[in-house]
Length: 278
Image 1: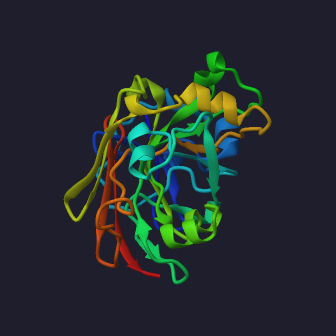
Image 2 (image 1 turned 120 degrees about the horizontal axis):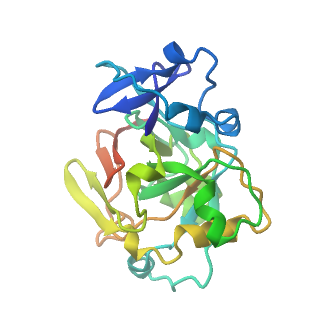
């Protein structure tokens, strides 16, 4: 299934995307909650498997598939080539940081330039959405906790990131986590460790990698993160980015208003965001 939210900002409705057509789930289930903790806890993923409607063609905005996660947990240096391009040692254990919920952004909504940081950069990432609450989840049980996958752009304000000597502020500016276009369930994705992912700026491919190059795979990440941190339904783990970011190019390439950033992952889809003045 490809689960979406569609409609104006603040008025999104849950839906399914089928061959470019949209099924309005509120027409079928008047009591369906928005995509989030209650949606997953009350078994709506299983209920949606019964939906046979083909949907309608709609010219509507798509919103972020998960609008208010309790946590957006991100991985640094989780692709070997990306660690090398930044001159970093390969981490011996997962390097985690977080983005705050105000970063959540629609798959085709604008990225707003911050006033307090320059050197804004792109990072295409495979994002994992949790569907079950868990703590001390073993690698063997990790897959059962995954609701699906999305594309995410871990937009980064490098000036703030490196000037602060920690990543919280530079990763957490408004709109800095465009995601979507849909929450794609694992049955449609297959092996999440064999997916090609790319990022382009104004049509020029800047990143071109594969999730086979992850240093720490998804079950390892879930086991490590959940060791002493309870993961809740709707939480997001963004698994890191391949090489090709702008900041480590020679000379560096940074985003500016008017740029269009497209992030694509095989079997999941593409998000495309225009950079605008904040």
